[in-house]
Image 1 (spheres, helix red, strand yellow):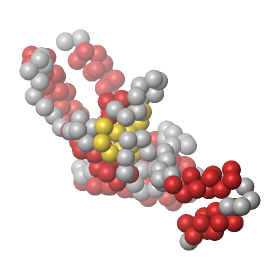
Image 2 (cartoon, helix red, strand yellow):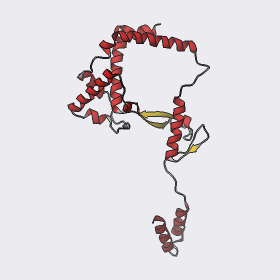
Image 3 (cartoon, rainbow, N blue to C red):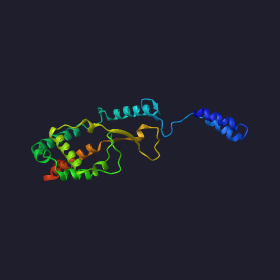
Image 4 (spheres, helix red, strand yellow):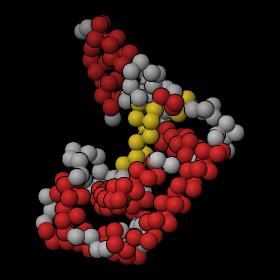
Length: 220
């Protein structure tokens, strides 16, 4: 229908305005371009510009970056020392975890974690943003706190907390936009998983600073 309308306009303008006539002719000749999509050349040799193909190539690219690989230049002794510190920290936490990490989450803790959420941020795969939670009723906050306590008690992270939307973000500056190395991966997680992480982080921070536990490990 669009092309038919273009041909009608061309026929009407043929004897009226040669300039406008050729403008319409050239307009119909120009191939349709996908505006806003930058073709990316990936290390595997493929170049993608179609949104679906581009998303698939980014998935493969970030998956490869996230896959652990043996590095012969890595300091093995440093790795062993770090693993030992982690074991010591875990053994120490196991002796006190009931008192610091496994007690039920209080209303005050939950409120503080909700207030820590940053506003005007993109949502995760569930479409919920920080403002939905922060301006919700006390009943919703109670449901969230109950859910978080259940997660801690069962020691199970919901699958929805482990799903994120990966977005390639250009590093800016004069870096070329068709090279994947000039992008960093930004992962959008759910707001509820962010609340859970904040609760654990706040508790862990109190535990590590208590009796200078972190200072003792750093001093080794």
